[in-house]
Image (cartoon, rainbow, N blue to C red; front, top):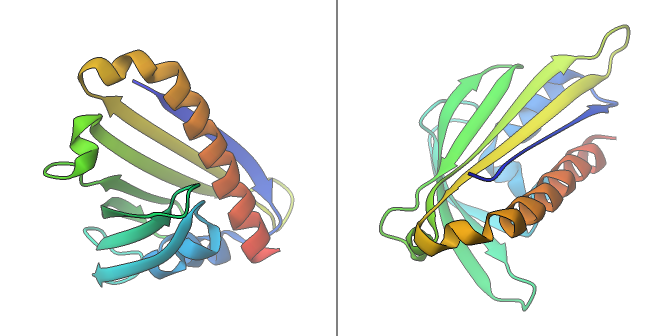
Length: 152
């Protein structure tokens, strides 16, 4: 199961980072390839919030993906999973989830951001696990870069 974790200290307080990452409407500001978010059901930072992210491929095509928040603790953690059942993603993925953990950095007003992405691949797609891990790592690095750029 491809799983990637990245961590970085960002020059922003935990509360500001929480406001950014826990509101699905903010995803285009920091999540790679996300161009807009639609159909948000639920309040920012609330567990069980659902939304559709519209992503753009390298070739400029739009891809829609549905997500739901599975865990939220204000100023500490925000986690979501992709709804893959009944979608084209179901052919390759059993599950896909992201968790963002926040904590104040020692001795400063900065914050440590830890992002963990995990995918369970289906069938023969499991053979592509090393490539999926590399792509996921690039995506998570870009997400942390996006958080930093949006807030500093």
